[in-house]
Image (cartoon, rainbow, N blue to C red; front, side):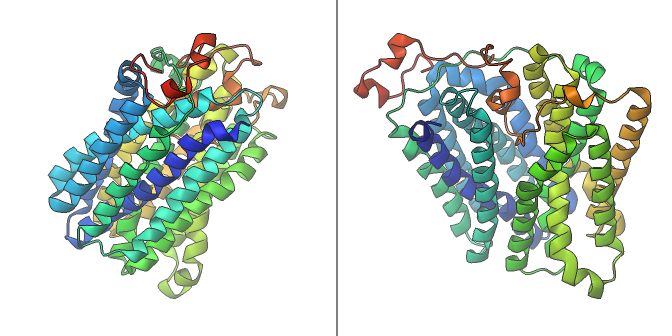
Length: 439
């Protein structure tokens, strides 16, 4: 792996995600302290994922028009402005509008970073690159939670720190001397066709969004409403993310040996059990094991999406895999928009622990659906299983970072085109600036 070519985007990723991880939890903690309802907090969280969905259809074309570094600088500047405005105007409806725009801009940042990593990799090292990307992404996200311990959420300072991280993340890319990738717009995805071809994959991706959207947006609210201190909220959110980082790979490797629908079914059953334990265990019994339960919950929840993607890859032809990645990401994003809007209803009925009732219901429904699908369609033979890859549900570009989309190294990904010989020979001076022709 040519690490020098990847140093700039990976450094920018770490800097940005530190602030992004802090910001996500900070919003929920601040709204909770302002006595805002769970429904309003859910709306703010759903708006962010709505912005991500919007960006799926717009960002690639915008980046092609102005170039990677210019687009990244614009997105980061916009996020810096939005982060500061959140701290100055604390009002749920306003925050929902700001989060919609912020989701769009965040999706654009991920497209720039992931497409840059794509053009800097080869089919031979793409699996290792994806693993490194996952570690840096989730590790930085977890560290961002711990930064919450060092700030006062009731003042402007933490919002300013998030803004500083967004701005500072521009520097590694802006000073990069590596030629930026060229892109073409991705092809439309037939979502209904994917539902027909891989219903279990689409259903699992949607349910993954239902769960993770509520985790990101409402789990900090559960802890604050349960009387946890700011430090405890930060620790618990970090444990959730670390569980997702640490358990995805061993769970995924197990799915290489068994019917993936069965593995997802068992995963959902365990998630349901963990959620019910968080509800039913008496307080003196739950407290000593709460950290372990939250870690395991994160491991189960974060593993559903990459497992659903691997299952879809098993069921489809190689030339359909890229479209499946994009379609499943859309299903996930729609679920992540819906989850924060639905979960507050169980919280209104059962109190803060209603969030875990919601998780249990999601796990139970997906388990029942997958059990029914296993009776309707025979499992894919193990000899036809693709190797599991842990994939974060960020943008369609992560689909092309996967070795599974290379068709034995012969196919060119749909949303980027490698620079030709003349572009590779660009002068050192030209490499330091971002050309407006999409370079």
